[in-house]
Image 1 (cartoon, one colour):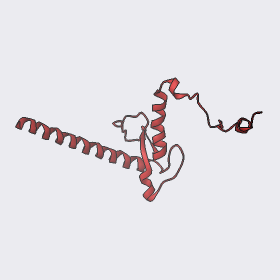
Image 2 (cartoon, rainbow, N blue to C red; image 1 turned 90 degrees about the horizontal axis):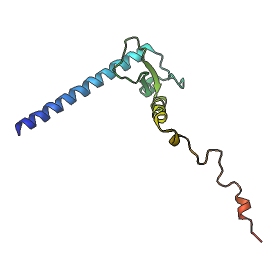
Image 3 (cartoon, one colour; image 1 turned 120 degrees about the vertical axis):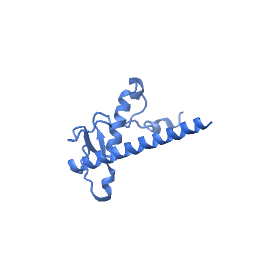
Image 4 (cartoon, one colour; image 1 turned 90 degrees about the vertical axis):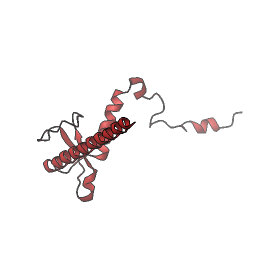
Length: 123
């Protein structure tokens, strides 16, 4: 019983250390990226300063969060929205083609088109 308890405690301690190391790594590359690059979203060109700077994220171009070269060549600063869109694009591209294209109504579709003709009384 004590071995299980010790194993659980060691596992919890290891996980806590890994999370702390990951958080520290994130802080370091984010601070470095903010020093290297202008505080502008690389996609929408929105500028950030003051409290809004927290909305600017570091995107890893190769999607490998452990690839953090000191020159920042694997990073780009993106706002929260563009960063989310960047990761959603990959998910959408991985979906099967038949689920990506809708055969249903488009934005140009009007559900009330021809309604007046349908509502006319028939003789």
